[in-house]
Length: 374
Image 1 (spheres, rainbow, N blue to C red):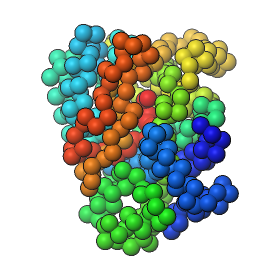
Image 2: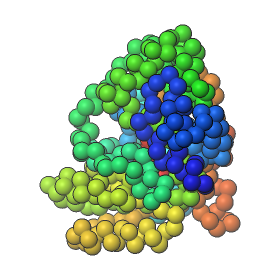
Image 3: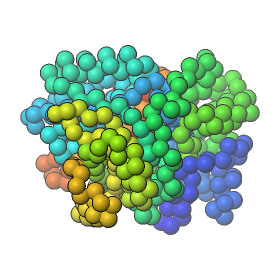
């Protein structure tokens, strides 16, 4: 990727201009022309390097979400992954290197629906489901620095999942706007006006609502959503730690301040099956440098006494933005629901783009979740 594309993607993953002509503002800052910005974004989206230009929502403000895992016998893995993918509430689904080898994110409109889906998955697969809801966030989806493989900006202060997480009950007009926002902003000169016209609203109404949702943390960030795998970051490790509860907050804040840590959060243990309570994501182009960074972090931050595990993702059965409301129009196929295994025998086992029903109820984007677990 050229330096010009890199600068565009690096600078505008958040704080996207809330003005009538946002791409004109971006062009001025980059010393480009507006049509060059739009053409570059369209091309990068077609290449699968950009998911969309739009909002990443705080899912728990609009419903409920969790990270879940199954320990699947290898011979059943693909069949179980396919069954899990039948639930529209599942928006990420990965194979990882661990006895718990299938990891997926679910987001639902209510906690009761979320628990019902988890129970159904357990009943249908005959496997106990590890349910790991977010308890405290130290750093989640603040953008991805494509120059250095880390985040762009300092981590936010830690927040418990119960803080500022009151569920929002959107009005009918809000629901329509949320649904229209889900696939991303249209790549036209006045995207907010185009969005408004499709809903019978004014451009001013749309801009005011977006500002309000950003202020209220309903929207976590507004900007370019990149696909770091398509940009070469395929060695992606979820590192989990068993930290004494009294120390977990301090260690989480310390890890969140590390430039190589892209996500960091606390989740519950499930003893004796799962002893880990602190999670972070680290991304790289190759496996060995990521492992070296993890070991260096353990030594330099005095973490060698704490048990830990490194779970690299090896296969993607599903990767898409999560949605909360039905899409007004079919979503574009996801070009990156693909196999991460470099061996010829492993290729093609992931879900192909376009195989999923696009008429189902889908859920608001959690972030690279962000987000979060790739």
